[in-house]
Length: 341
Ligand SMILES: Cc1ncc(COP(=O)(O)O)c(C=O)c1O
Image 1: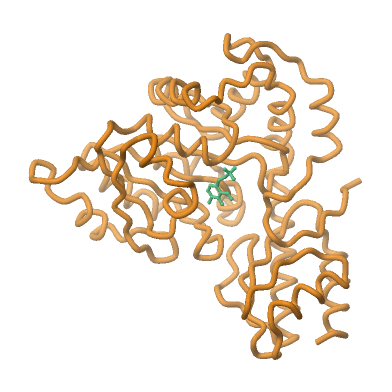
Image 2 (image 1 turned 180 degrees about the vertical axis):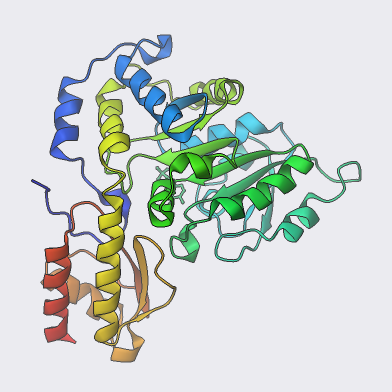
């Protein structure tokens, strides 16, 4: 049975499935630092295979996965290009600066897509003055534009520009499985246009902890070195890697349910006069309740009364649909809200 988890704040709030809890309890373990944890090794094997890459490493979090990937592609003093509202640029405490001495070149995107001419302009002249630009970072799905998936065609455009300039390409794929499911393609089709991809296990896929980074043997060996530096050599990590295997093998297809439930919720809220600020693309709604005269407190209190957790902003908020919420829960919420609006 799915444990109810009616928390709209983020898909980071998901709880492990009963099967994950059992797998954690029974996981075979060894010393990950010696490469001897069978559950970690299995997770890394499964991840590499799904993404169509040579190798993978298990990291403590998406932030650590992004950090070790960026370090693996660059030298101190290099610059990197990313979308101006990218999570790794705006939220991750500047690991790229503190640990990597990297210089950011943020480029405003269009729904997360970096226009190739803007990427070219940001690279500048390789032999001219200024720092070498050695890395391009993409984000798929793109959080700040409402969880928008980048298509393989879009990724290829920017990948090709980066390769014209011998740059590495990293994708923050915290929610790359949401992108693949929404586009109806395999995640390996998106992975083709990135040298490394960080994919979170602990968001919509509901594992309790961790991310994987996938790439070539060479780049993953480099990322592993930095993972160690950042304290990511976790020893008997099979306990948390075993749920990760279930995340990858059993939880991907069900993301389609989250997307369908998000659509039902979006349509229901719009009928009540609550607008969408951004078009719905995957599992996130950005809503605006000003038209019904509600403030943040009204929204939060209404949700609270109906058994949901949500943090209302002054004019609207973000609602993230994930494991632990089912269609009947969305229907009940909409019924309850109809009485309160
Ligand atoms: C797009 C994106 N990238 C990276 C991360 C970082 O993941 P973590 O919280 O596991 O460090 C997040 C977390 O919410 C995210 O939304």
